[in-house]
Image (cartoon, rainbow, N blue to C red; front, side, top):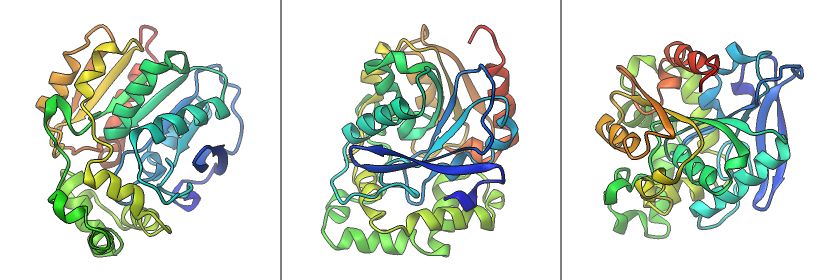
Length: 294
């Protein structure tokens, strides 16, 4: 939601096959010749483009900036459907075609980072570089990493929605989710962050995409795809990321050292280091953005 972003940004919309996709960009167009930076958030209750709002201000004016709410999340359309990975491959491709004719620098986290890898394999012409934060298909090397409740429970109609309501749509539930699963240090969680997650989680029909993720409908083995990647990439990994440990990231990066040009561990952070320690992450990102070799 626009109110979650700092001043100087605006909310715009792209039409996709599955409905309107909202994105955020600078109010003032930039004359920069740099490739556009496109920021894509992770999956999980309350996720949205707010995840990148603490990185945006330092890059305004230097790069064309775009941060999207994926379909089913944030202020974008929330179609009632059984979400599949193909939905995001399609709508992201449509989004990139709508916002620019240039190859983009995609900066994506967690499961979305893994989906971007698949899209870059299918359509490498869309991308200049990839910067991926804890990318995982959550079934990497044949092991489910992210399912937190038994499938028999979360697959039951009505009960799964009750679980979502109790677990993602109150201030206390959102704070508990952030503390237990996303952040390494709970004292880094503030009211603004909780409110942004709560606003996204309580959108009408927000439970459909979230439950698809929780059930594992969107999981896949990223290890089957990474060796095919040709777009130059860097992986960042939170040292304390839950479900997708540092050892997993290192193992994934070793599958394709030609494309994965570097691997950076960010100490004392969870799966979203850019939200937990934005200054540290930004410093690392800027170093790569300014490099002539990557």
